[in-house]
Length: 172
View (tube, rainbow, N blue to C red):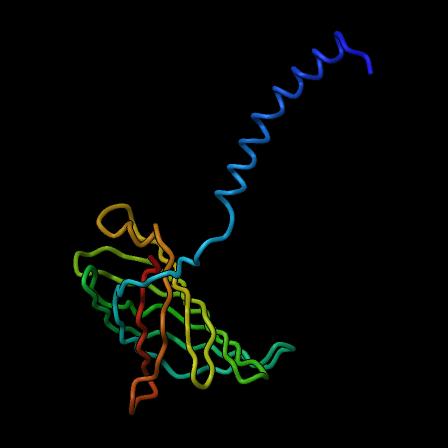
């Protein structure tokens, strides 16, 4: 083995690489899985959504498509309340496996006059109905709706076929 310039060069290379390896080791240690941080939820509002008659669109390879007009309703929670404007619709796909894919688009009007667009997608079955609402709120007191992920539950109103109850929760 030759000692001299090459050893000096190798030592300098080693001194350059060692700190990088140490940093990589620390970074790897910091990204190792730890306990799972389960998401929590914060109640945002409950809504009573009124519906028009179901309109059959037709069968497709994916299931039966129906359209349900959203005719109005109300919503209320600790930070927000108002009415549901009568201009939306829910396009549902009733799948052969017994589940229904929901995709509703409608408008909320808050008590302070803000108009908020909501697109609420989800899946519903016999004992399960969950949605993921996305909001488009104007800049101002309700813009916090644009800055989080939400989930919702969907349930029939006992004794009625023209309304559903939707509860919305912020994932925190």
